[in-house]
Amino acid sequence: MTLKAAALLPALALLAHAGAKELPVADAGEFATVAGGGVRPGDVIVLAAGEWKDAALKLDADGTEAAPVRIKALTPGTTLLTGNSRLSISGDHIIVEGLWFKNPTGDEALEFRTRSDQLASDCRVTQCAVTNDLPADDTGHSARFASIYGARNRIDHCLFQGKTTLGTTMVVWLAGETTDQGRHHIDHNYFGPRPPLGKNGGETIRIGDSKTSMQRADCVVEDNVFERCDGEGECISNKSCGNLYQHNTFLAVSGTLTLRHGNDCTVQKNTFLGQGAKGTGGVRVIGERHRVLGNYFEGLRGEDERAALCFMLGIPSSPAHGYFQVKDARIEGNVFVNCDHPVVIGVAGSKTAMLPPVGVQMTGNFITGAARAIDARCDITGLRWKANLTNAKTTGIPKTDGLVIGGPKAAAAPETTISRHQVGPEWWKNEQQKEGP
Image (cartoon, rainbow, N blue to C red; front, side, top):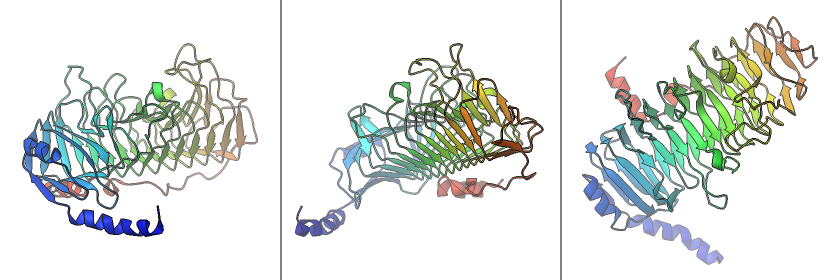
């Protein structure tokens, strides 16, 4: 491209935006007409207030970074999509904002694709809510609140709560390694209470699956709040490589952030507050080259897989859905306060799991308020200890200069804790204030 042509691009983008239209729609039929009529960059589809029951909305469109296509509620939070409603988007640079999916009954509420070969990239869902306040049923129906496909999409300042059906609340789906995919950003969302499901399939977030677990997703999950997300033992189930989980707050979550499959993930500066609730846990480690850095764990009551920090045993020649040996992990600068089981090493998830962690560096961690700092159930010669402190009655392992009894009686509060009022849709906060305590 010549310099002259490059200089024209901003002007062309402004011209495209200048021709953009506001397109009001009153129901799903009008939405389909507008969506099929050639939506242009900068166009804004405005959904009328009121209940949209069983509304199947699809949009395949291409906006630009300077002039995205928008789908928005006339007034945020007043467009209620109920029953078997679904919004599916594909294409590039689409922004969805201000919608409320209430008591969804379909397979998906939000979907970043319109067909299996039409995915969304560089799209965003913001200031939206998906909620359920209906009692659980026993139909065995599996559904999701949000399914993310494609590449570089963002879900932010949204609210997801009350899911009672089988199926993960939010899933990132991966395909073949040659596909442009992953690198999604999930931030500043509130993931609210989810009751125990009583079986697998009740995760709040899952990134990948066992079939795609050795592919890089490179997603960022940050600055979210998870509160009483008790669907199953894995609140977050990592099943891909290269993901970053940081600055999230977990409140009374009966489960863990589980590095279930995949390698090279980082869990850093998150806050886990058990608040004394049964089964509350922290981070579970499986696989290679993970980093668990600068996290704060307090008042966690879980044991075994739901310990504050758990290392699982590996299966020799593990199948993709099994347990890979923990190798070359870095566990550094974490603080454990008044947790029943701060660090457990060597939990067996299956009868064939027998490989202990190797190449693990435990550096600069502090454990306070526990009777025993470490619960070692396997050979721990594959762990290297440096500058770790505890004021527990016993370290729980053979004497080493790298883990000594000493240090302050109390730990400083975490600096990166994100609070409830910093996440979720602004309109939802306003509605809650109107209703009062």
